Length: 124
Image 1: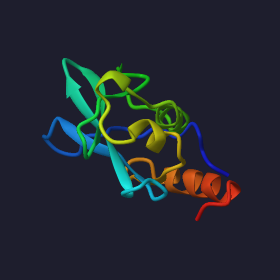
Image 2 (image 1 turned 30 degrees about the horizontal axis):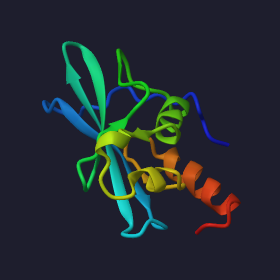
Image 3 (image 1 turned 60 degrees about the horizontal axis):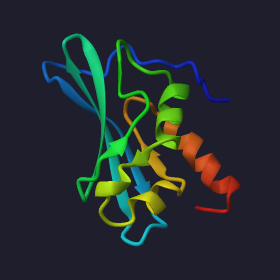
Image 4 (image 1 turned 180 degrees about the vertical axis):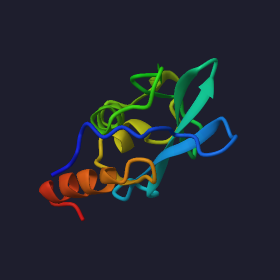
């Protein structure tokens, strides 16, 4: 059973103001696309940013928070990501419609959540 209320104490280990939260791999996409979600701290708030190979602008909800997100909130963020269609490069909209594989040191249960979801849809 996943602990959807799990919330890391901090994203930042050391003096750096940014941290990789999640690496998403979409194996069914044409080129095996990857999207990384980062957290950056500025003025006491945590700002979130999604980065892909093409430099697409990907909308995240929430864009920022005062504290770390729960597992449930980060799952919702991932599952509701949307590209800025006017400036989209590649097939990012199609990629985001898939179910990713997830890797995260901050949210270790994400891997199981998306692995179970992929299996439920017949994906490995």
